[in-house]
Length: 115
Length: 179
Image (tube, rainbow over all chains, first blue to last red; front, side, top):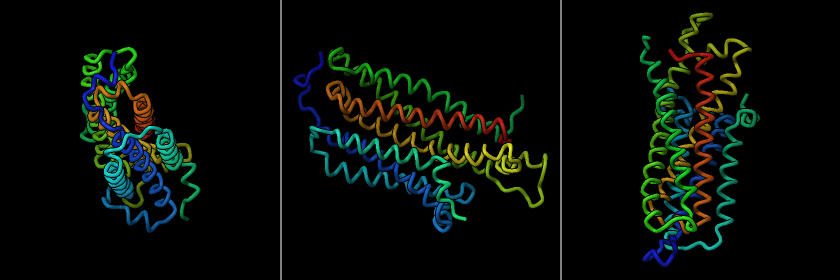
């Protein structure tokens, strides 16, 4: 059976958790941008990077940038760490993804709709 | 059987890329699920990891292609504004306005498209995270239960968000086809 002794030098799991948490941050960033664009016409206009697509272009591009930056920062901080109790990181990641799922649900973000 | 270029792109976005997404997810999920140290040899873990890399990157690439084609090719056609005074059957070439022209169909846009266009973008982020971790750790994943569980959750969520967006898209396209 596969055991730790069979791997010459197991890689620390810090980068794995950095990647997972960063994915949660990226998803939550998209949700936040959706709600901000709904609430403030100026934000929506500012996020219209590509006119035929409207503010969807800016929401997604900015969210991806936030995801990649968060990933780079977390990876740099955790790349040599072995995280023994990743429960909090997993919980935080799931909460961030849940926030994203709620934030992009139309009956929720329509609460913020600018008149 | 003639299809317009818009119909071809819409079919590519929803049916071709979406259909390929399903076996990629299934293969990856089952392989990741079976990657448990109690039931696998070292060589088995290595072989599973190689397959897993192929499945997860295939799913990630398909997810990116789907949302990019959808957002930058199909969506502009969907939301194009008709000339002032366009009504009735003439709205057929302007799906968004066609849906909004009647209270019976407005929710397909206000609820369906508004949900689909955003939730779909979670899929490539989550799928890419899984593919990266799988590539970096390979067979070592067999020994890390917590990371493996996290990947299963992210992979499942990536599938759920993409599948839900795909279903909404199919129903919206039925109500107001992109021609």
